[in-house]
Length: 88
Figure (spheres, rainbow, N blue to C red):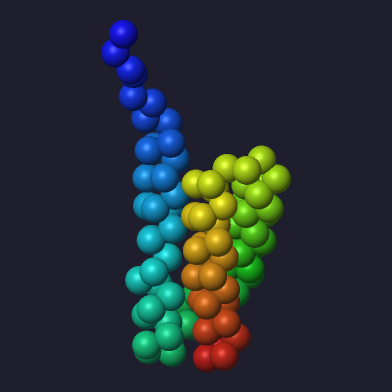
């Protein structure tokens, strides 16, 4: 009997990858240029709280795509918030 391929984990990891890498250019740009005037501190703090809660949730249910994506997202959004606080 042939084995069926479950694409569910693949979809989870792909969503995690795409949802995470979108923050890389922003984090790199603010640290390279120091330009943060157009960034909202409150919006980034709220998003940081959101990805932190998703990370906690992922850990609680043992979902590795959520865990890995949100570890990276927390780091990247933290870098953006830190740049906003440093460069104003």
